[in-house]
Image (cartoon, rainbow, N blue to C red; front, side, top):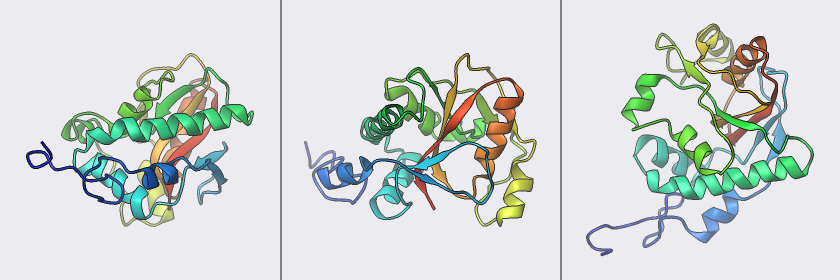
Length: 200
């Protein structure tokens, strides 16, 4: 079977496994609070630096269709959420809301991978936000350009009934988180914070 369907670790590329124990240990490190260039006015936590196996696994999930990584990443996200609840940072009934993406991007990927991970955690999840199609790709933009790019480009499509935790794959400047928080709070939604799978 291995010859027909070769497998490799989605984090480090080790042959014969989809997810090795070493990469799992790295992903299970407790989240730490970080500062972002753009202040979203809520706490932001990161599960780790965007490098090595974490970077590779995020790229494999999002850009290379490795949806077999969803159970492993979702277990790590669930552990991070449990940690925040135990630390008193998060309500036990908080709703996980994925950071917005464009509908067209989600279609190309067979669905939004961040939302897929959130749903698999066992916590209530809601895709309450989308990016407008007019928003440019932020890769290569400086901090000011990222802020301008995202301003007014996040739309609320459903109003969560309980406090939320935003979940993003990679936190960079915090511009998308800040705009998402502004959109949610203007609709009367309490945002307890944001959790990034990685930060750069």
